[in-house]
Length: 135
Image (cartoon, rainbow, N blue to C red; front, side, top):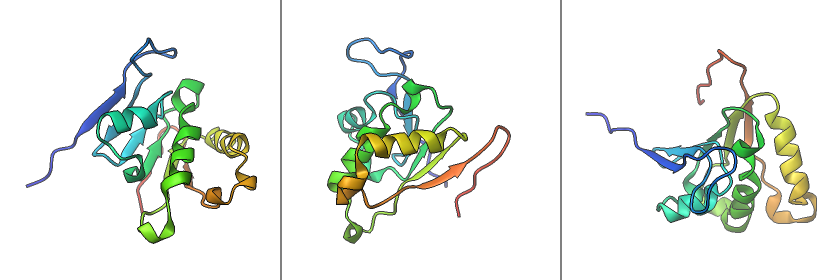
């Protein structure tokens, strides 16, 4: 028997959320985050999902409201992730602009000045029509 897939919607609002809501993002099976929204980390905690359990972040496209929460996710990880926890690094999947978003995120966080940002996620760029299959 297979385990049913679980979807936890973190937000369903449009680009600028109303109070108490977040923009469209969701978590699949507690480990795959689709778009970060504005408040993805806070929403995960609110709904009982530990952000350290996220293994994959999938970006549908690189509009700001879909990745604006990435610095907060990375900051959360930088404060709580340790190699001895045995947690694999994050994998990011998305369109070509994802590399620019990632570079800007680490620049914004001034990662080069803070040793807790020594880790880097695995990045897989996919084009429309391509399929990503984990190794």
